[in-house]
Image (cartoon, rainbow, N blue to C red):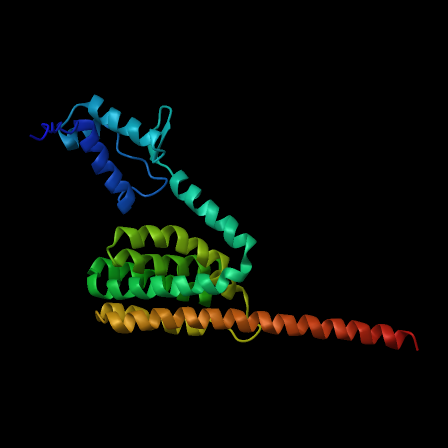
Length: 260
């Protein structure tokens, strides 16, 4: 005869914790945001304030929340920072991994674009279009810092339009880090050719595919976009390398001529 299994009812505080945790991970409470006061949470859940307080303390212990004396609870960036710090160190020590980074980013962004085309809402579409317009405005005003930020938020809006918690977290964390370590450099070069008109063309095409709910086309455009960025960076570096070589030869010529 099997031993009796006793199932204990879940504590109210653990149920509250599960709800709050899901809201943090899904982005309903983004990093840095302040949670509603204990009183409001207790009223919303229909429970006592001590139960809410116990759940909040458990989230602080898990480092998902930060308690600020006299000010309440804020969503902590520490879990994401700890995760990214290891990758940032690795990538900084191994710049030859850039090809792997682009392979990974291309696959992820292609998949996210396809899901966004299938699942996007009208509100999602407005957000994507908003950041597309901001990118174009930043290009017209020649504000490269704003171009970079608008580009990041454009792709993040697409990731969130996929309505997949893992993709949204991945895009807001690791893919953002990878962008800043690789793709952001394209905003600061015009040695070969100004890349921004092509980037705008890609963004518009991607927006159109998502708006028209064309997942295959959206994936192809997103992946082609990443290939263009990788090729542009490679050409830029090759040009710089040739220029440095030519400058060195010119300096040697000048030294020789000075000996005459």
